[in-house]
Image (cartoon, rainbow, N blue to C red; front, side, top):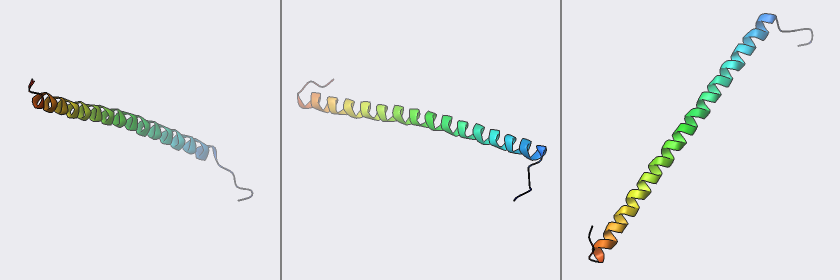
Length: 66
């Protein structure tokens, strides 16, 4: 491509496209962070419920039903 150069319009279009790409990547990153936080909350809730069931079962087995 010797002798070819980008026009000012080409450079501006590339800058716009790169900015859009960067915004899109930032949104995807935020979405991933939000989903990871929701997953962690769901896992914690499931663990808490599981532990609660075990505690109730143990208390019943010991004759100390809640």
